[in-house]
Length: 166
Picture (cartoon, rainbow, N blue to C red):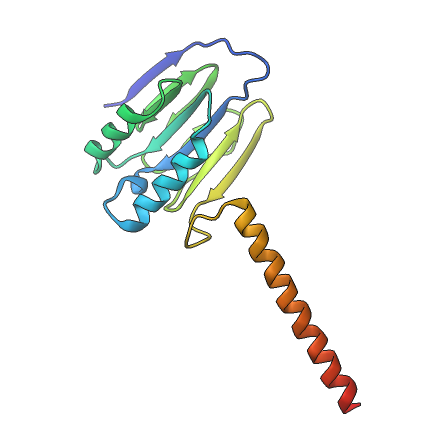
């Protein structure tokens, strides 16, 4: 059954309308999928308004319904198949792709989502599976600093050995 939806909304200029596109792999019963869903929820935690579009094969209906029930009422959640016009954002959501007006058609895959900023007219794929654990920015910066120090020491030692040989 195809959903046809039209929703109007007036927002202030400082609110940036975000659209997130995911697939139903986030709702599988596996440790990986649960971790990816948690990371996605962390990403949208402070979203004041937005749209979440889910390409679905209708395998995980119970899990998606639970997600819809738990998500903020400020967010519109729509599951495929659907032709929609939400807050002036129009598109066609299918089980294997999203065609959003004024953007190229895209497919999503496990461990990633696509974030649209409608006002800025940008589209970015976000990979939630790049790091095995969720790192806060400070922890990641500390790790990168440590890695830089280790590499710098290795280069210095290599240069010393090279100078002794020469």
